[in-house]
Image (tube, rainbow, N blue to C red; front, top):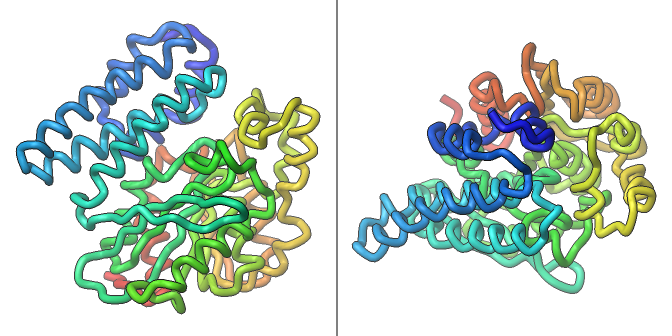
Length: 355
C-alpha cells in the first residue's frame, strides 16, 4: 500500500470510480501496489495504458476491429487516469492526455455503437465531443454529457452505455476547463454558454432529434448540467450527480484546490477563490423548470448531500432526489443503484425505450 498522502487521497475519494468507469480490476490493483510516491503516478498509469494500446493497435492491423476497440478504449481510460489530477507536471499530463484522446479516437468507429468525433464552435475556438448513436435509430433523442473538474469524455463509455441501450444518443464533450478544453479555455461558471454551443451544433444535424435533448452531469458537471438547464430551454430533462450548489461555500473545507487553480487559469488561490464564488446556483436554480433527477452520496465529503438537497429545494420543476445511503462522491461505489434507474427516468422524458 503506498504511503504518499496524495495517492492515499485518490484511493479514498475515487477508487470505485476507476473500476466503474472501465479500469480492469487487476490493472488498478497492480498499478496501485507499485506506486510509492505521487511523482510516479502519471508514468506508472501511462505505462500500463501503453500495454492495452499495443494490443489494440495489433488487433487493428489484423482487422480484428472488435478486439481493437476494446483494447484501445481501455487504453484511453487508463491514459486519462494517468493525467486526471496530475497538475503538478503539466508536460507529463499533456503527453498522457494526448494518448488518451488518440486511443479513444482510434476506438470510436469500431465501438458498439460506433462514435464520431465532432467539433463544436465556441467563442474564438472550438470544443470537442464524441457523438454516439444507438443502432437502428434514424433520429434518436440526445443526452448531452457534462464532465467534472477532473473528468473527460474519454472515460465516459460505461456511462454512455446506459443511454444507448434505451435508444438515446450521447454527446460527451470537454467544456472549458475540461479535457481538450482545459488548455484554451478556463473553467467557466456560466457553463450554459458551452451547453448552448453544443445544443446549436446538435440542432444543425439531421440525424439527431433536437426537439428531445436532455443534459447529464457528474461531480462538477452536477453543477454545470442544472446551471445549463436553468438557461437553455431546449433541454427537456436534467440529471445532476453529486454537484455543488454553492462551491464557494465549500472552498475552505476542501483538502486541496490545486486542480481548480490550474483549470481556472488562475495565478493564485485567492484569484481562483473569486472564480469559485461564482460557481453558485442560488440565483438561477429557481429557473430550472424541466424535470430534474438528482443523485448524491450520503458519505460524500467533496460535495456533501446538503448541496444536492439545496438544489432540490430551489428548483421550480418536478424533482426526484436520490441520496444513496453509504454512497461516496458520485456514489461510484453504488452505481448499480442509480445509473440504470436514472437512464430509465431520462428515457421516459425524452421518448427513449423504457423496459
